[in-house]
Image 1 (cartoon, one colour):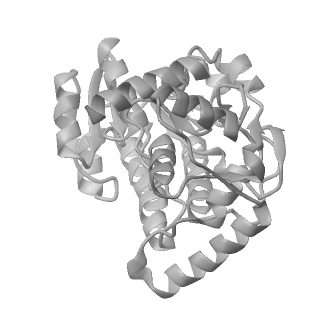
Image 2 (cartoon, one colour):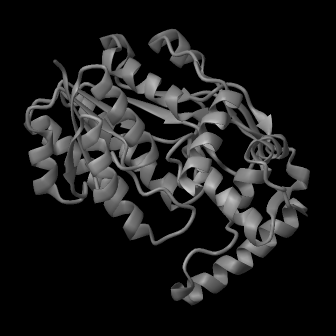
Length: 331
């Protein structure tokens, strides 16, 4: 029986991964910060540890006797202080790397992000080896780039490592992507930058779990690098959101905004919220405007060829899974 540690186990991806591994006969330890979800994981056969990857003592204990570490935990947000992102995404990753090396973990599977490609310019079929922007788009992208460097250095130092860059994960348990859109619709409407025509490359969470399992069994030749992961079925934002709200049987309030206007408003809001930190995250950020208004699609050729990855769950099926879960949560 293989033994695995899943970080970020109470998040959307980590939760799906932990349950799937346990169902397939792995001995799974899930590490996360939400006790209630941890109890649900335990009911699904996962040994849950409540803890933070920034706590090196907890991380060290969790890494002991593991065959594979799946690192899904991260601070992912369009807004926040750099130090908060750094402590979670960089220092947390370093803790896991150090402890994995100490306990001779056989494989380290790291979840990175295609946000490192983003530079507010339309990009289609982005390949893993394409040049990265000189300046990362935000603190999240910046710290995830550093984390990738840490993982690759560990691979060179004897920790067999592999990374994926999944694009816009959605599905049951999602608390960020679609829930934010539903919340925006309830308040003022969903921003449709330039009519919502920008192509959005999504990934069903089950497909990301498939990719992670493939990484755990990948040949040595496939290690030491990152792989793009998506459904390879980009759709205009307006079309995706329209389908989502049709499935939810909810009226969609479209807030049509020119890109330059939205970007300018976001810049002003960011300035105000930096001046008054107590206001929290702005209603609109420049990164959010870019994500909704600037197309970026991924080339997943290498994941198919080297890992055997195939997007098994379609966008429509994934949307149905999400809406079924959303209704069950709201009942």
